[in-house]
Length: 614
Image (cartoon, rainbow, N blue to C red):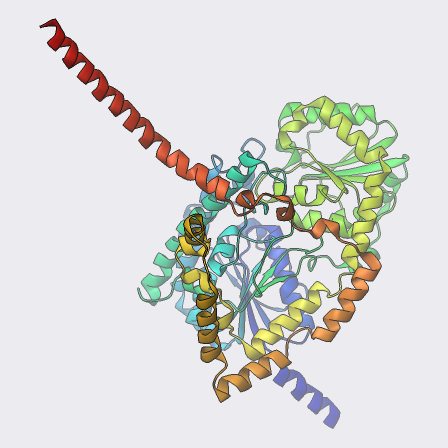
């Protein structure tokens, strides 16, 4: 009995009360946040999963399995009067291209839902009191919206963690002070072909990055207007709330993602949503087991839950059917949502299903290949389970995900418009089914990813506990956030270098001296810093051993070398794009000046001609 009591006391005193904010509007986002919540619950922490309902169709798809303390905020009357569903939003995805010049209307529904939900939250005083009564130690939220961060500040939760279900949001990177390096790091929604960009790609990537920052800034500002009406006009907005977060979890895998610079607050936990033990214990039911034995090869086709196969253009479907006919020794399992399947009745090697056990299929050795839309969840599952893939990105981050994978030789990327090109489609299907190098590369990458030195669940637990014990870490916020853009990106230095050689040693020494004086030269601060440093989540010796063994087993990792090393300096730092932007701005002015000058010359010529005639 004494042992039980002591154990209970130990668990109580060492666990944290954690609030996880996760709106119900898209499965991939909800599942990612649910996995974080369940991981922390499994580690003995007291987790509350708070779910504002954005889409009622997903109100019973919350994703949590171990976390039992779930608080649901139903849709407000305002939201019910103007219902917006994810299915309504995605109906046009087959026909719209999202880039810096178009497709921007797709952001409007989410913008509207976010503002409405924020108003619903802060007008619900009873709910706010319920949340306040829990006295949470740590708050975790996805920075797709910032009303959650305002809620944490209102509840006096000082220790905050951001968790992005994507590799990273451009708007959050900028707000956190993380460098973008758009010259070789694709923007989250950019359609450029990868990290090896020509000038047109770099220009588009820069424009898309700039658009995303501007678009999300508008949404964040509109949220701030809402919560400031309830909390006061002097309440901090997202420009303070986002960088005040102690840690930023991202759904990125360092050995898979494009190499990029990051700040110390960014912790990559990609793969946390993949439960390998559960997947490997799954068994296929009779129908799917039978289908996999029908032919020599089997290929699974799914465009995810948002972009429905039944809504794709007719000529795309017809081309796919012709490709299936050209591979008679392959069975194709196609996730197709509609009851009317008469268009495909004549094909013997096609199985149309409304639902499929995706992970169980991908884990089965009899499955030869996968055609995917490139959603991050499916992409990571594909990587872990080692299947060669054709990626057909439809919208948002899917193009980036597809290019991220294809550079490793495990997949082929097709634009969705290429579904209208039969010859290209047939060629790519033949390659993925019959070129064994894709399978070998996919299996090698799976072996590497499964054996990362530090597992995602371990990172989530250790860093959450680290923040709970020692956060917040305001001194880890980059000073760049307070700098004018001309200084932050070094343009002032570049301009000065054109005329002279700059010696920054004095400025750096002064800044370093100020940093030391502020954070270290006092006994209290010194003791606190020592306590933090001694209790880092992962010890240096452990890192040395694990990463050395990882390199010994799976290295070298040539694909992790930033492509920037092969770029001329003026491209690497984006100066060519900057000069082009300046030139684009000045060109009309110069042209107008030239026209005006020509007009004056013509006028003078006319006057002199008249005088001569006289």
